[in-house]
Length: 135
Image (tube, rainbow, N blue to C red; front, side):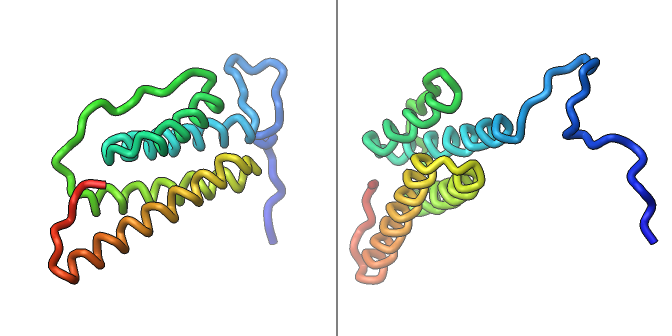
């Protein structure tokens, strides 16, 4: 019914390959560092210094070098930034769990909770007619 596989797997090491190979773990580390770096940019944009420092530590651990930090703030609404940060934290949580990186997974889950709470506070303030300030 199915044809047999005729070539070797792309995951099989080839001794005479003329390009470097990365392990699945290395690929996941690169992906996790990218998600955390994006989360760091949004966190810095929200002005959350302590949270940004914790994320920057994890990015530095994964990359072996400190990440670039976001210097300025944009005109984006805080609620939009919290939604974006929540999504990025969710992505990093999935990769951290796949990599079995407990420290990054806990940090990602905490950031998801923090952004969920900030969105709920914004929604509560908006429903009562209060002005929503920067977080």
